[in-house]
Amino acid sequence: MMKNSLMTLVFSALTLVTTQVKAQTPASSLQDLVGVRGSGGEMELKRRGYEYIKTEKSATDSYSYWRETSTGKCLTVRTSDGRYQSLVYAPAFDCRVAQSSGRRITINFPSGSHCGTYAGRINTGDTFLLNLAREQQLIIEQSTPHDYTVQAPNGEYLEVIQTFPNDQNQYWTGNQFGNFQIEVASVPQGRPIDIKFCAYSGEGE
Image 1 (cartoon, rainbow, N blue to C red):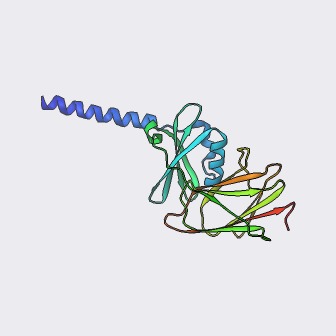
Image 2 (spheres, rainbow, N blue to C red; image 1 turned 120 degrees about the horizontal axis):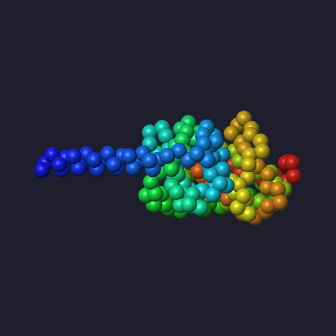
């Protein structure tokens, strides 16, 4: 009797492991994102119809969870050294609990200034709000290595058009105007940030 129970237990454990391995299969349509920087990957996943759920840390790696809106599949992305290392489909329960909504932080530009700043602690999911005009260049300068995405009022994500050596990224608003959202995709654990937002008309001043 004990022997049969032991065999049943072993079989159940093997079945569970097999199920988990099958559930974590590579997302074949996303393998072109292996090796890209986290910020670029975030924008691309959202463009391809994935909804961000949460991020978990494990030693030097981080694992972000995404839900494919068309199928409901759960995607796990492993990031190391700031770049995507693997993208696999995971069990649905991994995406069951969504991360709580982050803060919305409005950045104001003092009278006569083209720039606004924020210094302090932030969490993944926090969003900076900037009211920008058409045909402006936005320059974001950061003193700490965190990833973020820039979303225009129409829902599109802006691409970096130029990168400067002192950790500055330049964007172009084009025909969009209103509230632009800069969502924090990842942050250095336990470290405050210092970030500067500058907006210039035309080709800059």
